[in-house]
Length: 225
Length: 225
Image (cartoon, rainbow over all chains, first blue to last red; front, side):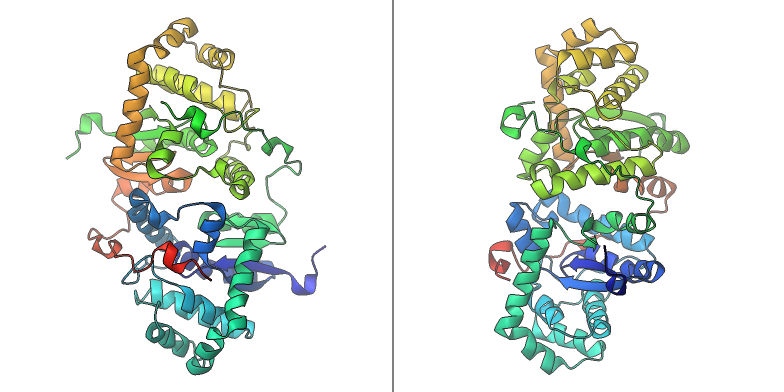
């Protein structure tokens, strides 16, 4: 079914997520081993949370510190030596996401996205303003003035909105999400199943009707312990 | 600091969670390898979600099917051959949780909890009513009549509430959570870090001030993509 000439791994990401940083460092090697092209699609995590009426991990006090610790451990396990969070978090990722949404060749986008992620999560520098984003663009060897101008154009802002809406329509509920011909894998731990899936070694039965169980309890009814 | 004679691994769980089922099958081997005692503490996941104003994975339509698929894959990876969900989900887990909260010897509780989990997630049978819970108790070789009676006593209902509140106070925001001397590990993927932590191989720096970044954006301000 898939056009083999354009077989790809699509990574939906937001720079705000340390897990997206970790996943982004792994997806290229997985694509290379499986003969796929990496497609990096910036999306606004906040809009995805809004669409599902969900809280982000940084919005739940007990979960916030845990998320940093867990992402650090996962980054370490993947050979990244941990991570260094940016000076504030959550921060506004819009400018960085818009810059990464500007149409450009795959190689340029891969270098740009890697540089912005590294700036935020390896160098621990702010990417919510022009200066941090400019530095990241320049370290990727790209033209900061041209990219920042293109990023602010109305049609580019619309492009980020469209990519975010399309991700939500495909069933994306968090970042990072890896999309393999419509099959979604969430998070860095979901990413661990991508290669088995591509090899045809996914243990899931084809008939998923077993997973379509009706609910027999909803929260208001089970609230009292 | 820890009393070596009572060094333990505490697993906070709710039978409603397929990830808790998977974690529960792993925690005994980890405890054995690390010389710890397993303490199984039933908690009401719905009350934990309420306390944090959070939605459960089954309450977000796009996440619901994904959760089953992901839990199946994780169960398979841990040698369980997948899982078979109960006939309805979410279901009301209160009776099963109360039965598992009755004071009893560790061995009895371990057998009981394993039997209830197996009934729900390996046999795919309902555990939200007396008949399913009775069958699970009997397969564990315990006295169903006595346990059901003890489960319904006011002080036992209060015990489950207290355990749930204590878990929330310790920072538990989801199930399963493994508590190692106050350090929490969430989910089946968090559980993978427990042994390294106990060996003294946790890569986290002792100084966690790096993780205490202030927020510079909250959602209402970053909602527009």
